[in-house]
Image (cartoon, rainbow over all chains, first blue to last red; front, side, top):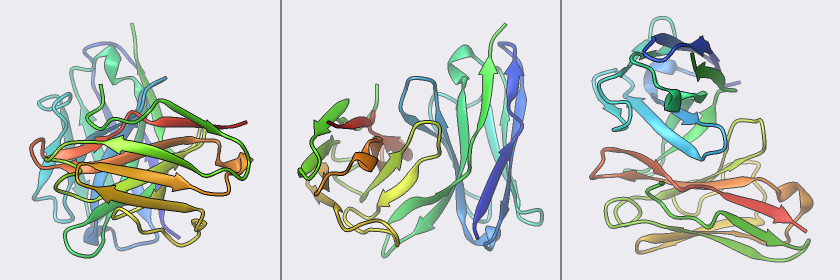
Amino acid sequence: EVQLVESGGGLVQPGGSLRLSCAASGFTFSNYGMNWVRHAPGKGLQWVSYISDSGHTIYYADSVKGRFTISRDNAKNSLYLQMNSLRAEDTAVYYCVRESKGGGYTYYFDYWGQGTLFTVSS
Amino acid sequence: QSVLTQPPSASGTPGQRLTISCSGSSSDIGSNTVNWYQQFPGTAPKLLIYTNNQRPSGVPDRFSGSKSGTSASLAISGLQSEDEADYYCAAWDDSLDGWVFGGGTKLTVL
């Protein structure tokens, strides 16, 4: 059974830092690209970042570029998101999401973690 | 403001057929496939439709998807009370080099 378990949420002051982790199990982690997607209170889903299976290709949403860093440790089946210079608008539930490949150049998010909430507030 | 445009709300009665639209541009829906996600309050989103019109195992065939040009639609036939949820469309955006979502549509079954 595929499982994605996030951890690291909590309360952080504006300008602070936080590191989210995601422990993956039930599949060959090193074969899949991974993403972080967030859901702010009262708003819609927002994609945050992507990392390829090898870790060599990385993308960020413009809203977090230069402040967030995605990484992975395939030996530990783990995904990370280092978040710096945090702002109130970063407050959200953060989901660890597996990306699967369909036929041709098609991709989709097939498994989501339960999410971890962190709040940026003074 | 979301890159993909969805109606914020939709409603229908049990048994009815309903569609939710998702409008994009040439760099997202126009160039890539569309996926749909269903989210109940307080829970993680779930993949509902992938690659425009494919249903994952376990998703009822009452749910179907389609895409034409820079727009996509999710159709739900035989509406049931348990379909009350938020629905999001998503696609890769070639110009942004990232995934973009619609703002979400809150479905109410009257």
